[in-house]
Length: 340
Image 1 (tube, rainbow, N blue to C red):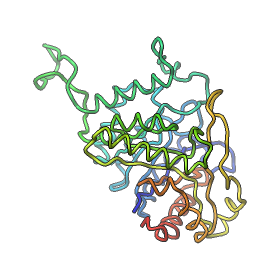
Image 2: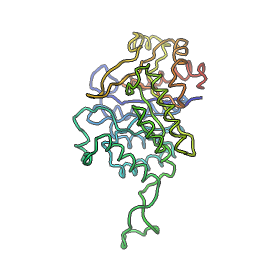
Image 3: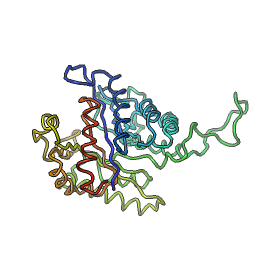
Image 4: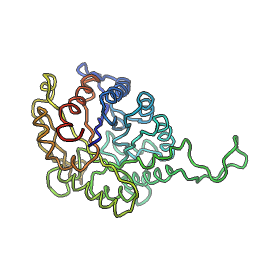
């Protein structure tokens, strides 16, 4: 059995070819798609965060709205770029969104990907400390977030407060007691996956990974997951970790599917550079008739290793079509693979 959710980047463009032509469209359609996915029996509604782009950015208003409109489905991010975040303010926002959703928040965070502007985090008021890289800064912000989410008091109360205080040092409010166990780290390398395991974070691995061995993408990703699980076990954590992978998967069941995705593009892994130093491997997309998809996906080692699969959706094609994409996987593919 696997949890199956969708992952939306929330692209929008004023182009007449797009059904998502404004930021308002992207936000409202994201809520509608989460509601539709829950009705179809999907397990998760996840959203990507990008700054300075015509995509979803500030995640917590959206997560809170989805939480208020749904009752069962997991609600998450994949991922929030911690270079841009004030971890204390983030802990308050996350606690509020999680309480609204009744404890269904699955918060994916990471160092982030290349952005639309140069050093965009500087515009948000952040810069690495002396001797730090921007990646170090992101991990430092993440560690502060994890610490305050434990709910321990750390701030000395005012002896003459406006309102009465509980005894002792004060913590951030609102506090969601179990949210600390539902933080995920988006790792592109094996080393950061191991680091995440040591800190007790779940693992998110996307369709892009550092090319560390030259092997096929799904093999490298499976190796990363195994290294993460070994590090988790060595760290002695008491609970079982969760692992998600993302894939672009389209079951070609009608003429619309064949028109949009039947061209056979991106059927192989791709190699590229995400910065001047980092060679990356980009995983293939899957688009085929359901019986062919079942055969292909059964050979994907990383999907086999993960407990959660996130389906990346082409959100600019509209809510109705994306609900169809999700339903086709749940109905025609997942049962044959033993995921349902």
